[in-house]
Image (cartoon, rainbow, N blue to C red):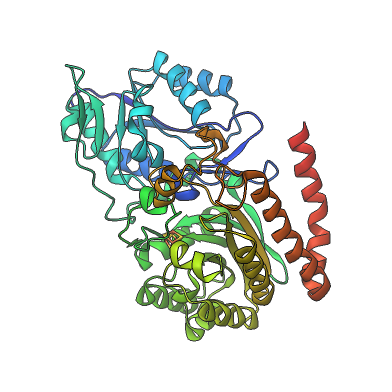
Length: 475
Ligand code: SF4
């Protein structure tokens, strides 16, 4: 029972100057995106709003990033909204800017609450600027409901995962609980955000499709040593029900004419019962959509891929990371290279666009492992490849190893973008890792231009966009 009737503002922080932060990537730590591309839909904002609505709260939603507000405009809008409580989320590459802004918001607002992966792993740092940090798993529907209840009843002690100083300035930390459902989305919240800002053009084999992301599951039980996802999204896989997912697709189609979707889940095909039922429903109801998802190469079968294709799947992102045995054992345990090869072949034969996600710079990376991975990626022949440099996200096993072995070159978290080099290996310096990344991309592109006419066309088509991105970054 509410006792205060506070006004709440759910805030997606603006981008720092000349940066585009993909705040939900890297397990909620965020990565640095291209300035020429769209922003990522803040799923946590949608679920947070759903939680407040279900509690009967007085609230507003401000997606300062989606609206492309700068810091000053964001502060002015917050001022005019006059909330009593602001709930927000931080990212690692923008951490110092985000914290500065939180401090400024704190000067205007009674209570500032921070949620998300950064709060989960470095709550003390965040608490220097905020009143309350709540450790929880994405997408924070229940966490926001608990925050509301705790604040309205003047009782932070009842908020699961709360991290705060009590009236005696003693640090309190309540036990953490991860989300157990992702079904509670209030669909009309899509009307509260600038949805067109999140529509992105995504390449397929023959053409590209305008897509918007939908969260379909959270959690991953695997133990890839570099991966921050289990820290932000939990280890238990929690699916949105097939019924709710299909309802959401229909809502977005009917209200916004959207028929392209990025189904966001750490491993979209983890539960074969779910994915089979989902594809069957799309086919049976003739939804006529185009979609892409990300998964592990050992979580699909030829039959499943065929069904996915029939239900509109035009693109799959596979986490390959490295193909050198010694690195795979520590980096991606349990994933067999022959299975990866077979999966890429079947996916390609079905004319589904394949993207291989690669990582270089895991501990032990050297010339031999790099050569082996480059050779295998050319053999796998994906339609596209992205290369990240191993980033020791705080809280991961990679961070502990790199920290103990003194491999980390900087603790300036604004450099933890996932594309910069912040740690070395025993064989490669930071600079050599950046060069190794360029070499892997160069070899891949050279081979594709020579052997793949559809890649050649796409590559030529992408040049203006790449030039535009480069020019924007120079401005
Ligand atoms: S499979 Fe590995 S890389 Fe992928 S989300 Fe899970 S832990 Fe992370």
